[in-house]
Amino acid sequence: MKSRHYDIVRKENNKSTIWLEASPNLNVAESRIEELASFWPGEFQIMDQQNHRVLERIISREPHHRQKVECSGTNTRPRKR
Image (cartoon, rainbow, N blue to C red; front, side, top):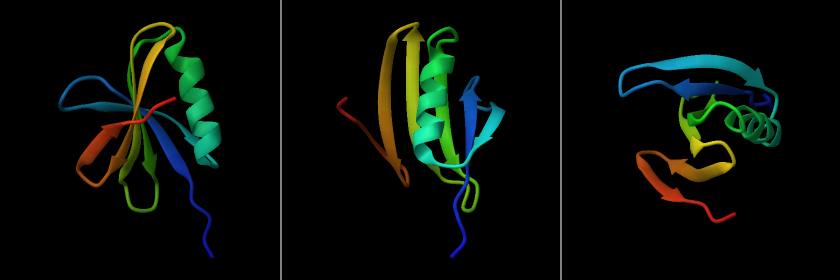
């Protein structure tokens, strides 16, 4: 069974994203985004490297204020924390 790896990207606008780093699992990716969002507000995404799907979006409009959104195909819904 092949293990999954994840990419952490930051969405800059409707047309571009910036790749930031790879992560060995979802928990590490989520923790890393929490760190980044604490000083760099914006939209971060966790993408599956194998199928290139966005698994989660985390939106931070200002430090210490984040909204986590789970992605399933094209549908998204806020995830309660």
